[in-house]
Length: 376
Image (tube, rainbow, N blue to C red; front, side, top):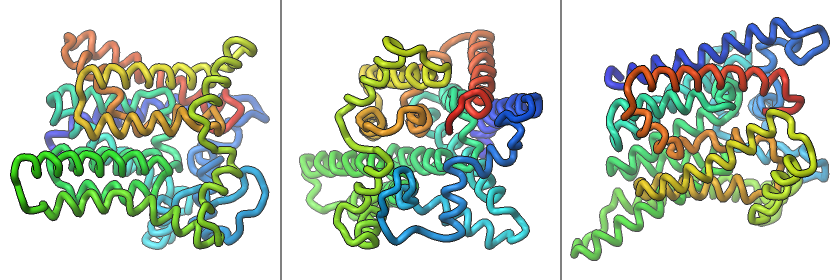
């Protein structure tokens, strides 16, 4: 904790700036605007927050139904379970506040894990920069909302760190929990399992006859969370493809990226894109460039597998376009090329760039919840 404390303090400063800017902006909005709904409502109870809170209170539906965007089985169970546990332990705390507390706590665990990965690969300064960059992304305000991104990123960061340090059982267990948090937990499970299998192959080729139990256990544990939830949804709905039928009702189907390219083209060639959607498009394009740079930098296999599959899932879906920058929040290894370059810069340059990133994130966060007319 002492080693990571500068990174955690810097992360806290960045996100506190974003929260202050958003709060001041919300209080200055005119009557009838979204800001008048209240800071608490927007951070704790709006959009997906409401879905998770209702799952925590009432549980899941028993039928598929036919209402578009209306089946709560699309939302994975770990976060609402934690919200319910927090409410049980602290019954005086409102359910929305319990959800926000889980997200804020997990955001610091995520920043710590992100620092740990950067520190191990490129040194303490790079780890600090990596954590601050993650807290300065355009949609980083979501990290302190009742959403699952902070929980999922925390599990991802520490699972990848466990792989890098050879702690296979911990890596697999954390990946299994991530698979109970978001659909993209499949990408993390694949990263852990593929890396474990490659390590196992290397050991066998080197003449090690005995199978390492911990490595095998980690490889087997990693996909269990995702598979368990998808299988449970199938049993609950009485059809093997139940989870995928639910996703279809939410208009999420695999099309290999055709829908993403078409929407990007329409936004800039046919329409005049809103600022928020322009930012989403820039984030998607930037993520692809950063992945190419990560490959050129020869990042460790688990990081490349995770970020590569995360991009495939996010870009290859035909679902709604606007939340895709948020879906990429857990892909912090994509920021490593930038973090390493900034870590080598002089301190005045580093401070200037990170300060500008933090301020830009604060402004975009306010616009995301108060200027954009849809969910984040």
